[in-house]
Image 1: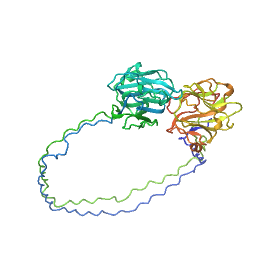
Image 2: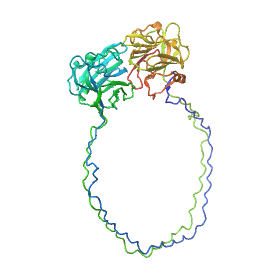
Image 3: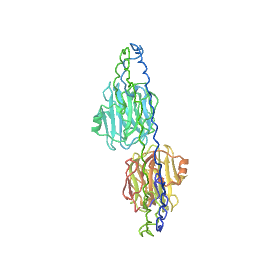
Image 4: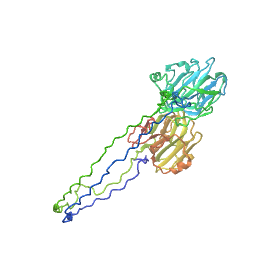
Length: 551
């Protein structure tokens, strides 16, 4: 049995008290109901209601109202059709390093699709419309798009990556020539359109800059099929309600910071020569409205007089008197009181006299015996957020020798020592472990208190890799050493897409639950009884594997 549970479930319920062991032997007879012994002999006759002898005279019909014969001169007779919000397109003149669109830093999803619309004005010479530079590998050529498409019209550009292959499409048709190279695999870096990077976020060369208009940049956290891309070849809108939309930037008139509009906090910067009316809009907005028809140029000259209402000329002289209502001369006799009912003197033998209190679902803890490479918790592959917090609970059973409870190996850098946690905490009790990274510093806490000793090293910056607890990786997802394995229990692993402050971590030191409704919860794995695959429960599709001695 583990320690953690879902915070949304109450921790206890009131105990149900014991039932009585005996019941009363009889029910008391009800007292008879007393009724009056006589009633009044008659009901008074109501007086007749007098009616008026005549009706009031009707008011004379109104005179016809004179109306104007024409409309005022300032009333329009027709209206233009409405149209949806259309984004602004940014203008990059080429032959200069001053103009570009940039998002830096940015973490790309494990699989991704990048969609944009460009209007090439010149494609002579060697120019690059798209550039992704990897920060972890310091690879400025991680993914580059070359300017070889037609000029003088809008082009719908798509680059999609399925975890292995990088494919590019123009107006729904596959075209390998628009990519200078394929994705290098570094998911953490800088995205630039309009220039080619020779270093992360810079190193521009004016001779390689692009003369073009750019309208909207969207990233999706999935790869797209050729058939789907073909079906949306003519699209000029982005659906802001698409569940796979990771981030989108659109021209709203600013020539500097462009706020990303889906909530991922990746702010973009654009420096454009100017901006003009673009092409794209939100798919949820209709593309046109019906035209409002012209108003009439004249009105009727008068209003017809209403017809008079005819009323009767006389009324009946009186209202008939209602007959008195007869009453019964006596009341019915009450039924006799029921005889007392005999009840059992004791409860049946199989009825419980008390009930246990209820408790919430509690996760299972996985047992790792140490001294073996066979037992571990692993998520591979995994993309960590740009800023992250990792929370878990462990119960160390032994901490002699050199053992590592936590290991992150970076796939892009092939760095098995990207982030390691050392087994130096107290044994024999549950420990609440937190590692948090704010984009610069890596800090570790045990039971709400900062403790640098439980980290062997800090995060190396490679966000794409393999997470292992219970073993130390000497290669991505493997290379275990039995002498470095950990003898412990592990209960729940949670990752959040934000860094936590010291004050917040201190305030939750005694927490033993994970709030599944936390908007920053990126992924969570809990023991549900399986010793192999553990399905992640927040919808991020990062499946974990655990091999435990028992749970």
